[in-house]
Amino acid sequence: CATVAPPAPDARHWSGRLGLTVLDAAGQAQAQSAVSASFQLDGSPSEGSLSLSTPIGSTLAVLKWQPGHARLEANGTVEEYGSLDALAAAATGTPIPVAALFDWLDGRPTPVPGWTPDLSRIADGRLAAHRTQPPPPAELRLVLDR
Amino acid sequence: DGLSSLEAFVKTAKSGHAEFTQVVTPPPRNGQAQRPKTSSGSFEFSRPNRFRFDYRKPFEQSIVADGETLWLYDADLNQVTARKQAAVLGSTPAALIASAADLATLKRDFELSDDGSKDGLDWVRATPRASDGQLRALRAGFKGDALAQLEIDDSFGQRSVLSFEHMALNAGVPAARFQFKPPQGAAVLRQ
Image (cartoon, rainbow over all chains, first blue to last red; front, side, top):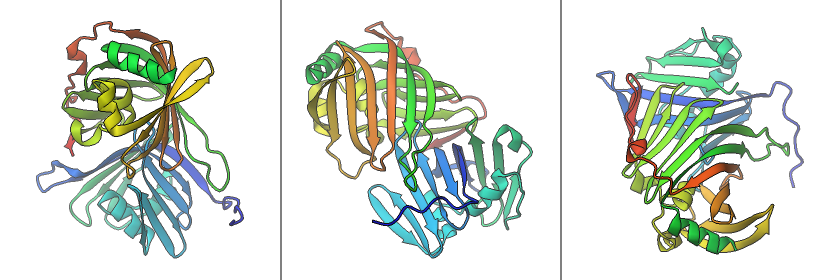
């Protein structure tokens, strides 16, 4: 079997809860593309995984990426995507900047076109980001486990 | 044995409340064990199909099944998601312990088998009949007729263990406990 690679030196580990709401023209939250789940984010923008679970501990989806590969495992199926961005958009139904999360969660406000991160409460383990482009507008909120 | 304890529990425990501790252990990654996440709170149920989990530590979160809608409220995210219970409840852990009206209803969604006695509990195994679901297997451990532990293995190898303490059965949980009103200002998402 494949030898077990030790995690890359820059591998990070974050866990907590993730809330994503997409707003319609009137600024109302659109139900179908909302996410409210506990998450575990591992690795780095180039190689890592993001898993989403229900409060009671059942995994909803696992996103895995490495150079040239991006895979979504959910509902008993596995789907391949060309990039992490394409994978993230497929998993949540709307584009979210998973690669940038690694910097934002480290307190580095790396700019992402169309997104405005708010790191003012990162010391309390809270991250918010607002998307203006591409429409519709979206709100992403992460609360880290303490 | 476990199966008869489950049958007695489903038949006689019409309602109840308990404290619970939950430990979720993600599957190993790169061959390394993952840190388990512990949370705790209170659990109430009233058969059929009404129950609630109120997580208090380390954060505030509630799951309320009011008989029709399954509400999930996360205080930190200030977000409420609402789903039709019929669409989501069938083969979930909650169905096993709180919402099934009788064993026959349970047997529609789960294959039930006795799983021996261990750690002073009589165990029953429940394997969901739907194969594409999130759940791989479920084990319920009873001390006499009182549910003591629930082990949930999902299809990704994540294990969630709920341990119940001070379980009071047929203690007449008021119906209002299962009505959920989204807090002021929370984003409510009906899916």
